[in-house]
Image 1: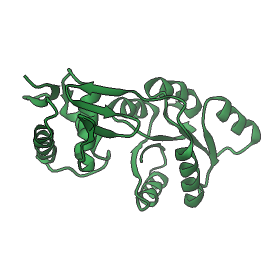
Image 2 (image 1 turned 30 degrees about the horizontal axis):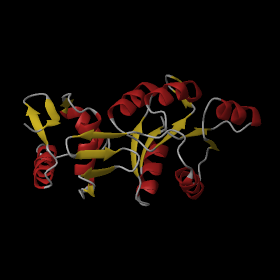
Image 3 (image 1 turned 30 degrees about the vertical axis):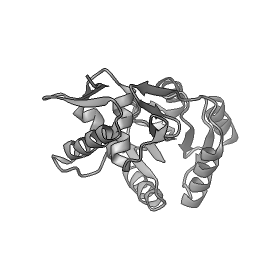
Image 4 (image 1 turned 60 degrees about the vertical axis):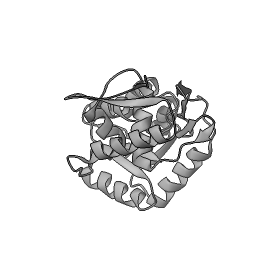
Length: 224
């Protein structure tokens, strides 16, 4: 599961990132609503953990924007304000859950698991190009009815390329889709993953190809 954490308290954000990471969760951290909007445009996240009091606004007011960018995205609201009226305001504003700081990691994990068990009310579509089908809900690639097994980073690259098929995906966007926002990345790491993904698609006879657009990024299209 990939989580976007919007929290302007750097020490708290890093503590939650480390604690959740030890349970196998990938946590991207941003500190403002503006950066949260950019992150949701660039990457697919499974959950938004949203602080209420942020430098550029109230998190409750951002919920509508988040839903527009990612309709199926569950949202847990964090706040230092625990009054009943505040909780009601947050839930009525569209949050799926509400937690009062200080946050107990075990409780946050339990709430994340509970949200993950809920069926989504918005079905994410599948996309098909040639013999390749990508199921965005399951994050699964299928070629001629057979699952295409890929390492995690290659699957994330493919997801980003299929989502924008026929359009060039900038390198920066792919970096955001594949790596945590604070990961240290070697200069040629992305190209190496793309090269391996290209070979895997060819070996599977997917009928698609990944073109490099020099100086810009990559484009997924039907093979000629």
